[in-house]
Length: 402
Ligand code: EZ4
Ligand code: CO
Image 1 (spheres, rainbow, N blue to C red):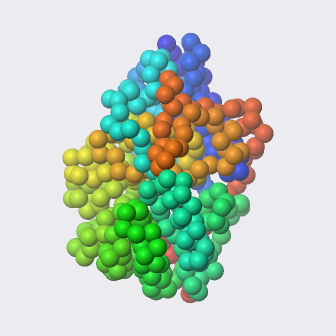
Image 2 (cartoon, rainbow, N blue to C red):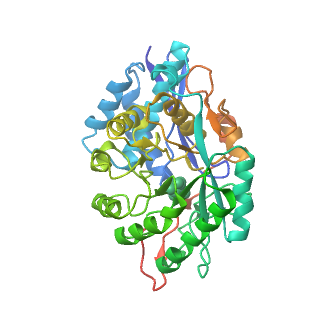
Image 3 (cartoon, rainbow, N blue to C red):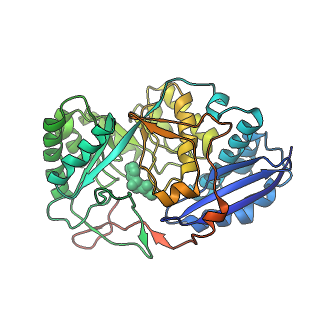
């Protein structure tokens, strides 16, 4: 069997997605997510111009060899554009292997380690009053873990806080928006919110919070300490992800568990964090960290050091990435949690899939391969629309981390 064709499909059913569809000379197809939020066309060009021509005629069964060929062979290793492109190829080849074998991908990865994939939902609201019903809504649907984000008094909007009841969307059309950030107000407000949430929902609901890389290490250490009475499951992205030494400092001050990794693209970004046990959850994803093959390698290293998975699963990761994540989540011994934010109805229609949510768990499809596809005719009705993630500024106008 040979790779006969590979198509790069860009579509915007409410938001932009890039997809690679690999077709074999036997007519078997496989899909891979190649979406890099706000930089979509860079990956599309990398695939179209540099990767697809080299794939044609290759044996689709050689997944690891193809990964090595694309990673080592490029000379320019790592980085989000390269690793997202490699991920798309890798994911599509796993899908093909599953279809050829007649098995869902999790079976190829060693089979089930658990009955279902525990997911966490996103409760967010501008005010504490609006927040409580949001959390209650998730509890009512059977969620056992909820990420809690709120607005901060004195700030007009906060990244990661969506409108209750609407699909989460961090990007906006055109060039970046420039919201204003104030660390002091944030550090003062967040522990109060968690005190109220714990009082309302009791000790057993798993609570998470995402800092979005906006603090310094010592500020994050203080927040971790202030949140200790409320026993968070994790504090996410407390400082910019490349500040590996920063995590050592935070660790020295707090027992609040730490999670990081949604922007990581390879094992080299998190090697010290994992081997030094400086974090508790590694949140790298299939689509941005080199596909199922490389993410498995990261999770295996993490397993040796008591670090668990907590893969990113926001709405800018397509249903193909979510499907792939579920197969991996089911098969690894050190699974922690999976982020889950339902896609819009338009997105779900463009990516027909067999995974389903039930009582706090997601379950991958039992059909061969990943159990997800792209409806190319429908996708063609939604042309690309330029959109960007925001740029964070302090009150004096300085560009800040996020
Ligand atoms: O910032 O998906 O945990 N989820 C997040 C998301 C990410 C976006 C980036 O594209 O932090 O909001
Ligand atoms: Co996050």
